[in-house]
Image (cartoon, rainbow, N blue to C red):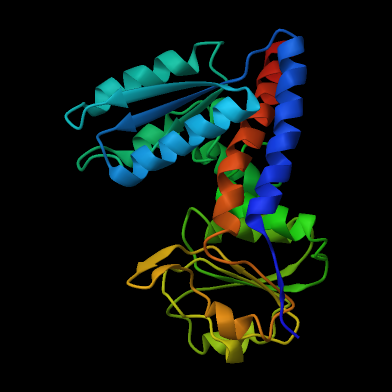
Length: 286
């Protein structure tokens, strides 16, 4: 029996409607949610993603401000802009599009984003809050994985989960996100010896390596949930890490690429935006 396809586009549409209603309530209270995006240079992918955020902002009623700096901008110019946005009470969320130009200190710049406005969950403080199961703003892509499990009512407590990929954007944040609801979690990567020995025992497999066809049908336990986070460009088009056609004959649930996790990721930035407003108000009340 073929796997149930976890439809990211459908979930994203549901979340957009929920966000639209939440934004309307905030506006009735006199709060105009605002997201500021910083783009340094003209990286085509970064421009595309920023434009996508602008479109979603308009659809749900969020004010969107785009700060476009030239490739020649200095690190100090970016840090000065960040300081201004951090201290502007009208700005509720800040995101720095990556990659930054060569020679610019990415870690220094991301650490300069106000943790309460850090919609992408990149500030080290938020990463620490995640590890300690404290309240904060966390990376949207692993949050999208968790949202898909939630919306498809996949049980997590007591389940064997295997993360394939140890990157800072997805693999590492997923570990505490899965441990929180008490899954038993194994973290692996492309150089793990006998990777299949781990994945075959898993109830949930989440892959974020960036290697087309890496996860094959013989690596998956019948009925398992398979979430493919990777986006790989190939001559045949965009694919993930998972051999989708073959694995869908074995798995119980599977995400497509495209139309899976990626569709949910962008809208969850706006969930972080609204959560950030709540955290900012809480901080002001102290």
